[in-house]
Length: 124
Image (cartoon, rainbow, N blue to C red; front, side, top):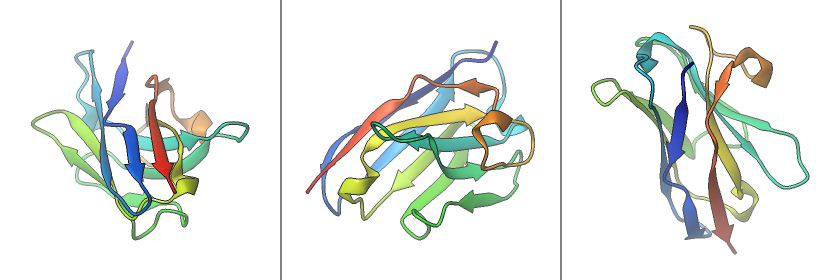
């Protein structure tokens, strides 16, 4: 079974930037799959952030992060990134990457494999 691993979380000030990485410990080729980013704040439901479809496909963003976050792939490194800028305290959450089918979805149940998450904290 595929294992996803997120990294890059941390504590930054309001307005700062972070880049999260999603890679795998298994032998799967992430470019064959849609990869989504979600986040979950304490006491809240898991929230869709962004997705990149398989291959040189489409990218999509939630309205809450549009223009501030960018999803990208490094095929050679078998890694998907979430570049986050203009961070706000309300962006504080555990961020997860997830592996889906070829096309993107905003629904968590369309993604079958999840990483363990990485904490992002934005101080005001």
